[in-house]
Image (cartoon, rainbow, N blue to C red; front, side, top):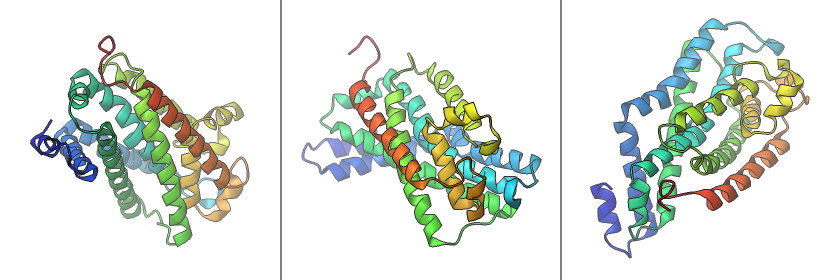
Length: 276
């Protein structure tokens, strides 16, 4: 524990909000001290945008550039990167090095730990989106939406996506047998979902079985929701359903939020296997 968190937790009557702020500040400092994590978290999405935006410069259906289509997919992937993948890898590391065990032994409410993680997830996501928008607009001249209604859609899709992926990340963090094996377990899952959910390819051109497979998981709906924000309204006709399916997007993400919450509550572990 850092000095800040120790000072905040030394008084059992300290307000929950003060403890949560201290935990959040500590999590942010830890993030930016880890150069490898910072590089992957922020540089990787931008690098992918540069590579795919440079290689695929043509238009897809409806006269929309691939770069504009890909931007929506990368922003949706940012939800998965910052929430699910990050937590599913970092939490096992903190479990193995004893951080969670020590935290459990303090009078600090356990919810403070989760609040700190959620705060970092939001910060990382906002930073990723900002950088991607700036890069896409400045380097590739991708238009940025100006209609308030689109940004309202962006807000609720982001909130539901972050909620579901954060809870799923916490729940999934119990599956890797060790911190070393976590990236090997988590990363292939994320890659498979990206390739089948319309991030790297036009979703309507994927095989039907692949579309049905992707429709089970949140990323397909996140990507479709982001397309409704960053693509012209006419592009809805090029979706397999012929519409943006906003109600279905909200329902699926809410269902996965509930699944993630139940799974996390029932399975989250504060100690390594065999120490419980």
